[in-house]
Structure formats: C-alpha cells, structure tokens
Image (cartoon, rainbow, N blue to C red; front, side, top):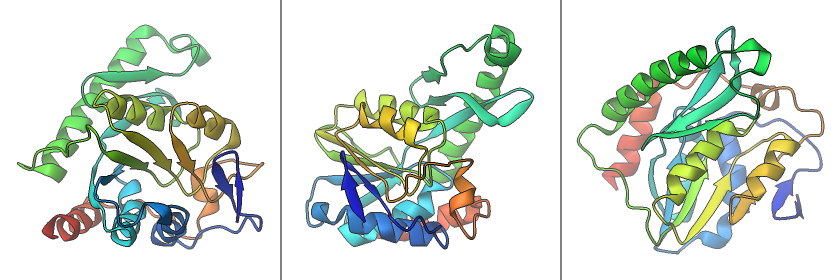
Length: 226
C-alpha cells in the first residue's frame, strides 16, 4: 500500500471481498488514531455502516450515523446530481438545474422525496437516541465508496457546521477526480483503492448486495450497547 498526497492506493488493485473486508483495510490505514478518546466514527447509511463498524471496533471509538441522501437524476436515479443532509444542507453538481435537461421543478421534487426518506431513516435508525456531539472532536466520515463525491460533500458540510477539531474521510474506493475534490475539504483522506478506470463502486467488491435496514440496526445496537 502506497501513501500518495494524503491518501492510500493499493498497488495490486484487487477488489474487496465485501464491506466488512473493506472496513478492515481502512482500519489499518487509520490505526494512528487508535487509543484517542476524542474519535467519533460517523457512517453514511446504509452501505457505510458495515464498513464503519470494524473501524470503530479497531480504534475503540464511538460509532454513530451521518444521515445524507443522494439526489438522483429523474430518469437516471443512479447518476447523482447532488445530495442533501441534516439541517437543510443541499449540494448540487455544477450545471444543475439544466444538466441533461433537468428542470428546477424536477430538482425540487427529488429533494422533497429524499428529505422525507432522510427523516424516516432518522426515526428508524436512531429512535429517541440523540445525535452524537461533533464539536471539538476528531470526526471520521465513512462510506462504502465514492463515485461523484456529492453525497460525501453534503456530509462534510453537515459535519463542518458543528465545528469538529479534525475531519477525516475514510472510503474503501473512490474515483480519482472525486477524491481530489474531497482532499480539498477534509483534513485527511484515507482511501485504500483509487483506480484509474472507475465505473462504479460495486465494481470493486466481490459481494456488493444492498445493505438491509436490519443489518444497520443490528450493528448500531452492538456499537451502542458498549
């Protein structure tokens, strides 16, 4: 593994077995944070939770959620035109509205749907548990991969508003252009895999099934029990 400009690149470019395997690789890249009492690991649900769980375990750190939602194009929902996060944060890709003919009305409609889903997940995952305190802490934002970077950028904006002392982004795999953007908004970026030819996050996992709500709740219950 090479460290290049504050992020890591695996020379062999082998895909991860699954999200847990990816989290273990990241935990190794972040081991210099082990033993600190100010570290907070924030997972982006749902796929980021099984990645973040082994990181929090290895670092003996608190695990919580960073709730954000991708805004997909109306006719191509897999393509992100932006993202929203808690507290009214909204990050749009350059050229939106207008990109691929999308109108402001269509953008507003997608935002409304995703805001409702954001609120549902907040209730479903957290229940009565209050959000973790970020102020003055070393905060790690974790997801299972980055394609355009818009979702992580929304997460960064939500986190920065709460004034952490240090902001670390940890993702198993990312497109290199998105990674360069993220390096400009974080204090540190850990990314074990940054392929030159990047088509999709799932391409770099042998198993990449959708993470179920039940798995998220189970992992959080284990983390919060301690």
